[in-house]
Structures are given as structure tokens and as C-alpha cells.
Amino acid sequence: MRTRLFRRLGLAAAALTMALSVTAVSAPPAAAAPAPYGKVTVGDRTFITDSNGRALHFRGFNRGKYPSDRVSEQDVQEMAAKGLNFLRLVVQWQYIEPVQGRYDADYLAYIDRVLSYGDRHGVYVMIDMHQDVFGPHFGGHNGMPAWATRDDGLPYERDPDGNWFNEYFQPGVQAAFEHLYEDADLRAAQVAMWQQVARTASGHQSLLGYDLMNEPMTKILENEDLVTASARFEQGQLAAMYRRLITGIRQIDTRGWIFVEPTVLVGEGVPTRLPAFNDDRVAYAPHFYNTGVEVGADWDPADGFVERYEAAITAYPKAHRMPLIVGEWGPPSARTPGNRELIRRQMAAINRFASGEAMWYWCKGNGGYCALDPQGAPAPGHEPAFGPYARAVAGRPTAHNYDPATRTFTLSYTLPLTVHGDTEISLPDHVYPNGFNVSVAGIAGRLWDDTRNILQINGWGAPYTTVKVTITPR
Image (cartoon, rainbow, N blue to C red; front, top):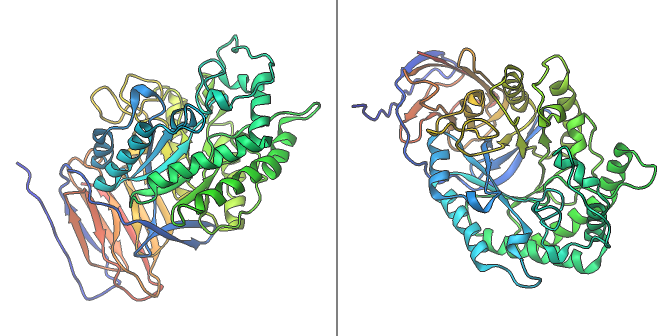
């Protein structure tokens, strides 16, 4: 029987490097995480910080899109047990306000319960207002309620090849988006709906914030290409909608982060044209999908997709000192060699340019988007999404990487003038079943907490000291 191990090593020489071999054990539910508080910019990246001033890194999954897979406490507990600290909770306006002016108390209570699960198990929650092809009025998709759908009597047909994204360009769908952005009563209803969500969510410590609209789309004007349409939309209607919703939410909740998404063209290497927003707690939540892979291809590692995406995605949050959390990513199958390599390279890139991510999708199955196998273990090809990571850094992070091939994790950071709390590194026991070796240069004290499978490194040391952590399998 494995025993609990709590080991503190306190040494006088702050710059000493030493190795520690530790046996990993299984983890029960995590303790409540400190509430997200502020932000800190390090080089080109901005991180959300907790109340101790530690830079946070978010790792997790999406869940809750369908009535058949509402988030349960077991889901959140299992996420925490696997070292994850982030849930992007998928919700839809159609369920929040199925009848105009009447909010569904049961659905709002469900959102409240999920946040309570996050409170108990140390998992941050982002509330994603989801839509695909506007809403259920169009072919049973999801998002806006039928009463808020105005198609002007224009046609809509399902895509004959099953590519649902093409249905965004059907005339009825295009008209519905135009009315949502331009009709005063729909504008007001959308703000009021978000205020109901904020009233439900704002008291929870686990609340990270609000993702205002999933993959926003616009009407394409005559003789307008997609790049031109995207720029016009992001600078005009989309920015105006975001400002309305930010203002409305802030009347209810001044603490929660608000996340804005660009159009999906960012996945094609097209930089966003979104403007800045006059709110210091607005963050960026783009998606990271490859179009060819989404329609069934196996990824070609020579196509330059990851490099183009990284080049396109970083300028906007850098210019406005915004945290960046990838709201969705992951292929529809991770079992092919190209897609397996895509996941590995995407995670490596996310570690370079973002401060967190939520993969699509938390479910058990044999293939598809499901990140878990039928027994609940990481599905083949998804292993990088379950690797070690620094969930809280008591300093300024400068490098963060995990190599799945060697199971080597590295972290570098500099100590600030003042620091509170420890650096926390999640080390899942499925990654290091036989234990691990840890080398720390710069500071010496550390604690292994087997109740959460977290290595804690104390923040004591001379200001501006560089701390380097290396973890390898034993």
C-alpha cells in the first residue's frame, strides 16, 4: 500500500541545484483554487494572476454542449484527479431563455451547481456562450433561441456533403446574424440574458469568466471575400456587440474576466482586426483548428499550419497586454500519425504563446473528439493534453515545456521583488507511475503534496533570481 509523502527540503544556499526522487501516488479531489485576481506581463505574454500574485496556467477541456452530457460533479472531480484545473463550460442561450423574457431556473441552477463543483475541486470555470450555425431553427444546431431567430423567410438547406460549417453561408442564417447585431430589441435581450448568467455565476471563487460568443459569424456582403468581411465585422458589429455585453456584465460582476473571440479565420493565419476594449479584465480566447483536419484529413506536418497560426495569433494580445487562453482545439481523431503529431506540436506552441487552453472534448469513447478512452484514461494520441504543467508560478514565467517522448518537464521563471505562495507543478501519476527526479536551480525548498499530485517550490530567494526546474521520470 502506498503511503502519503510530504517532504520539505530547506537549504540555506538559494542558488543550490539538487535532485530529489519522489514516488507518485494517486490524487483525491483538489482543494479550492485561489480566485483569479489580476494580471502580469512577461515579455510578449500576459498571465492572469491569483490573489497571491502568482501567474496562472489553465489546462482543461470543454464539456456540456449537449443535453445528454451535462457536467456532473464526477466530471469535475475526475478532471482534478488528472491534474487539470480548467473547465470551459458550454452553455446556450436557447436553454437559458427558451421563451422570450422567461429564464429557465433549472438551467441557471445547473450552471450554479457546476461552479460549485469547481469551488470544491479547485477547477476554474469559463462560461462559453456557444452557438453553431446560429441556433436550433437551422437544422437542429445550437445557440440562439428560436424566438430570437429572424431569417426574413430566406432559404436554409443542410450541406449535402455533411460539412456543417458551410451552412453559415445559407441566406437564412446570414440574415439571422444580421438581425442579432442590428435589431435593438435583440441587442437588449442578449445583454439581459448575459446579466442573468452573471448574477448566477459571480459569487463563485471558481469563476474565471465569460466567453461572450463562440465562433462569431457575420453576413457576407456582395463581392466581399472572407478576409475583408472578417475585418469589417471585427472592427464594426462584433466590437460593438462585445462593448454592449461588457458594459452589461460589469453592472453585475466587476471581478470576472471577459473573453472575446475573433472570427475563425485566425485558424487560417489571418490576424484579428478586433480593437482594444476599455476594460482591464478582457482576455483573448481564439480557437486553434486546422480546416483540413476538421473535414477528415490526416495532418501533414510539413504544411506550416502551427507556425502560421502562432505568428498570426500573438500580435493582438501582445499589443493590448491581454491574457490569451485557447478556448478550443484538437482534431476529430487523434489515432492517425499526422493528427497525433498535430496535438503534440499544438501543445508545444500553446506553452509558448498562451497561458492556458481547453481541448475539445471531455468524454469517454473509442475515437472521435473524446479525449478519454472507455475506461477514463487519456485516449491514444491525447497524452500531451494530460502532461505536467505549472498551474501557478510564484514569479515571472519565461519558459514552460513538456516533451511527451522523454516525459521531461522544464520550467524557468524569475523571482519578483515580493512573492506570496509557492510555485505549483502538476505531476499526474499516470505520467510518472514509478516516480520522478526533480532538479531545481535558484531556490531550494520544495514540498511534494500527494493529496493533489503537486510539487510545490517555495518562493523564497533573492529578487530577480532565475529559477530553473527540470523533472524527468525515475
